[in-house]
Image (cartoon, rainbow, N blue to C red; front, side):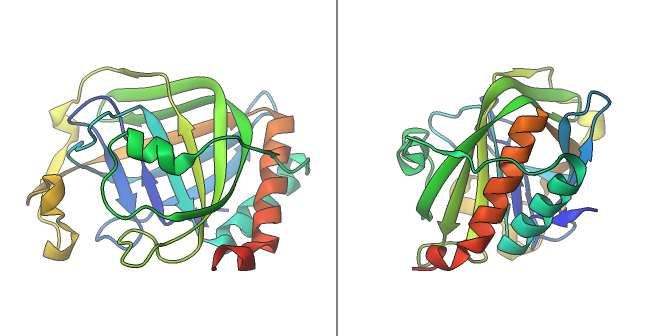
Length: 232
């Protein structure tokens, strides 16, 4: 079953390519689906219409960021367990996600991060307008987060999945891109956004080994059980 996401975004090193979908934005409706591939691995699949935002980051990296409410963490974790079973909670990660965001030139109000754990993916890819952003065998960092005051993206305490990718291949096929007028409140002019906004259909796929998928499920359920610790 498809499970609700709040935000999916894929910053890249291509200055014209920052696919972005927010569940409160007009025409955008991000969901995630857990399934098994032909090799018995866990596959997480997302398909939606994405804005192609201006890439305003000072030092951009290729990565995927997925934000979900706690009910989705519970539902997705349960879906994974039904597919491949439950494993162990991911190891605590010795990283500072906020420092990484600052180093990448992220602007605006950054969230509070209470805990970060990690599992590992086999492959990850985003395909949009004939461009593919992909990675192989890298960590997925799983954060318990809550918005700071005046945070504009987060709807409340959330679980964040963040992972780096390796490369961008191809160039944007403008025939697969549409320009649409978006509601004025969605336009972030300080980030270089204008009306009309370019949009394109995109597909995102994460593949984890059965063991790492089981560990992801255990971590999502653990975070759901400890969500009260993410609202301080």
